[in-house]
Amino acid sequence: MYVGKPSAIVVVWLALFQGLHAHLDYKDALTKSLIFLEAQRSGKLPPNHRPKWRGDSALDDGKLANVDLSGGYYDAGDNVKYGLPMAFTVTTLAWAAIQYQSELKATGELQNVIDGIKWGTDYFLKASRKKTLYVQVGDPNADHQCWVRPEDMKTPRTVLKIDENTPGSEIAGETSAAMAAASIVFRSFDRAYARRLLNKAKLLFQMAKLHKGTYDGECPFYCSFSGYNDELFWAATWLYKATKRPEYLTYIHEEAITATVAEFSWDLKYAGAQILVSKMFFEGDKTLENFKNQADSFICSNIPESPYAQVKTTPSGMIHLRDGANTQYVTGAALLFSVYSDFLAEHNQKVECSNKQFDSTHLMAFAKKQIDLLLGDNPNGRSYMVGFGQNAPTQAHHRGASIPVGTDSSNVNCPMSFVYWYNKDVPNPNELTGAILGGPDINDQFHDKRWESVFTEPCTYVNSQAVGVLAKLATKSIAR
Image (cartoon, rainbow, N blue to C red; front, side):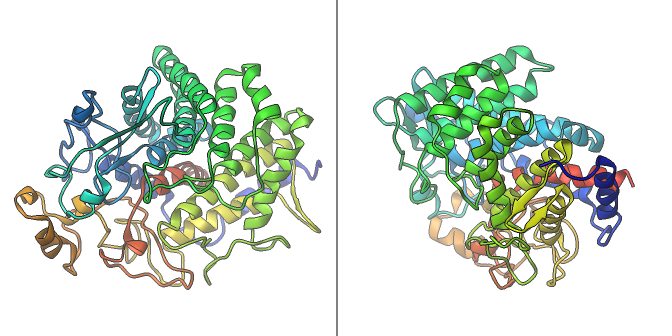
């Protein structure tokens, strides 16, 4: 349904960014959010690595399987490398680089985003061999019994993989999506690298499709409760965006299984794929209307003013789906609302939720509010990003940040490591700059205690989903 005039959208858009809470420095938050991702790097660190308290780690990863699996990212506050959340981190970071390339360039952060993507894709190129994908390095049970820096860890670096005999369609599909999305980022300046990524993405998609099955080897830490159909749809969508080959569009039309959902996360990708496909609907492919309607449903389920709102919020208005890294749902919704607002503005459309309509400015206002709540515009008067804003948290649940540099934590036995560094009620000696922590509970209560991980543990995919929205907010603020 066509509505209004583009000029009206511009006026309202400018009003949105000239309103209250202009004190938040989105550019600084963007810069710091990327510094956190650097702090999560595993392997041999580059000379320009910004968190100076981090050092090289896990250089022998993969040795137990006679492969080189050094590099990649630790997902959170521990020292394990999980393939599924790492791939989702790269996919969403690549999406930011694609959707908000000019904004990232204007803020001076585009190269840091590209470097962050490549840190992940270089690892995935090593992890995907023939008909095998290595999906985890480290023994999470042993790792969680020790509180040591990744530079000093002596816990087993167990290697897990998927192949024809041990399928894992979720991880293969998400890694395919990551490689396909990243190939779009690189193809304008490094065609050879982009081609390598795209070739791997195609092979991984075939692997996910031909050997269907759920991989439970990352349970109980990253169990896919949603199954693998969302990852197959998500991967096909990114492959179509990267190649424009009809076979992927045919898959979306004829084979993809979709669902109406109210959540976007490392485990549930339907809404992200639906919003991407909706752009094709707006551009003229009316056979994709069902996906557009499902994208609208995601919006209607999340926006509080909608008659169909079903997602709970805290008293301050922050999305709250469940305790434990709840901020991933906050940044995930913000990303999808921001991108969909771009599509609505470009095609002069609105989302209809029963008797109410929401245009692009409504969606962006919601995305902005979610980010603002994270950055400190909330009743608690505190930021949930380390090193940013007022009353920022100081006790992130994070091994490397909580142990002083120069301490040889490898010489301390595992039980005593918790006594020395985990249980002490003091600020971390190393600032985990830019980390968006787990955030408040459903009542807006937050405890800045290292041992209460539900509040204080960071995750890479919380930050990766915030990058594009922060770039958009930062450049609109700069333009004032």
